[in-house]
Image (cartoon, rainbow, N blue to C red; front, side, top):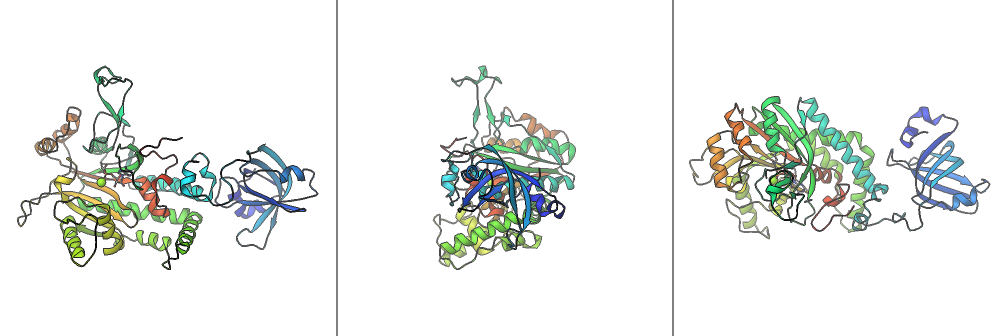
Length: 472
Ligand code: 4AD
Ligand code: MG
C-alpha cells in the first residue's frame, strides 16, 4: 500500500503495481473509458484512476458513487499534464464501502454555511482538508518554537474554581440541577477554564519558561465571526521578563509559525491564495488579495509596529477629524477599542501587525502590572499590557506583565471586585519568591484564520461551538 503523497517521490513511481486506499471524489465515464478521482488523506492532491470498458467489473466500477471508500490496484502511467503528472491504470478494485447516492458532498462547490451543517463530512472537501492540514502544522510549529527556546509544556486544568479573567464568562460544570454547589461533585461551584494563565504563573516560578496549549471556554454571547465558545489558546509565561521581552517573544512566535507553515504547507497556502483571488475576482474587485505577500510580511520582525494606547487615541481622533467614520465615534482616553478601531490601525494606518501597549488599567484584567504614573497625566492610570492586532482579524494576542506586589494585587482584587476565595494560592505566589513574570495568550483559531484567509472562526475549528450551536 502506498500513499498518494509518496508517489511524488521517484522511488515509488517505479513499482510494478501499487495499491491506493481512499475516498472517491468523482467518477465520470463515457462508453469506453472512465476516470475515478481518489483522495487518500495524505495530500491535497488527488489521484486520477483510469479504467476501460474491457475491464471485467466495468459496469460495477461505473456505478461507484462519490464518497465511497475503495482500494485500487494498478500501474502508474506518466502524463504530460503538469498539474497531474501521473495517473493510475486500473487493474483491480475493492469496493470497501459504497456511499449512498445522497452523500451530501458532491463535486459542485458548496457554501461554507451548508458545510457547517455537514461538519462530520466537510473534511473531505479540498477547502476543509487544507484548513485542517494547516491547523495541524500550526500546532506542531507552536510546540517546535517553544521547545527550541527551552519552554516547558504545561497542561493547565480544564475544570477550575476561578475566573482568571474576571469577566464572568465561565461555563458552570455541575452534576446537580438545583444550584446547591456545596453538595455538588467538588463541594463548590466549578467551571470550565477561560485561561490557563494563573496556573502557568505558578509553573513559571519553577521552570522560568512555560507554555500552555489547550482548549479554553468562554460563555461570551458575542455572535461574531471571531468568537467561539470553545477555542484553543497558547499561553507562554516567563519569569524575569519585561513588556519588551513579551513583545519580542510574541512577534518571534508569529513570524516563526508563519514561516514554518509557508515551508511545510506550501500546497495548501497556494490553494488558499488562488481561492481568495477567485473570490475577489467574482466580486468584480480588481484589487488582488495577495495572501502569500501578506504572510511573508509577517515573517519579518521589523514589520511589527509598537504604539501606546494614548497614541492610538490621538491617531483615532485625527482620523475622525479627517472624515473617517467610525460607528463608535466617541473617541476619548479610557474607552475600550472596538474592533473597527483595531482594524483601522492594522489595516489602514499601519497596514501590518501592530502591538498596542499600555492600556488604561480600568479596561484590562486585575492581574496586570501598573505602570509608573505619568506626571503630565496623573489621572491616566495604565498597565503594562499588550495586544497584537493583525489585518483581517483585529486582536490576535493579548498579554501583560503581571502585578508582582502582593499588597497591590490585593488592592486590585478589591477594585475589580474579584471573587477571591479560590485565588489565595495565586496571591500567595507573590509572597514566596515571585520573580517578575509576563506572558500572553494567542487564539489558535484566529491565527489559522490569518494564515488561511478564512473569514469565519466556525470554519477553522473541527466542530465549532458558538451561541445556540452545539451540533456534532
Ligand atoms: O485577551 P485574552 O482574553 O487574554 C487572556 O486570556 C490572558 N489570560 C492571556 C495571557 O496573558 N496569558 O485572550 C487571549 C486571546 C485573544 O487575543 C484572542 O486571540 C483569543 O485569545 N480569544 C478568543 N478566540 C476565539 N474565541 C473567543 N471567544 C476568544 N476570546 C479570546
Ligand atoms: Mg484580550
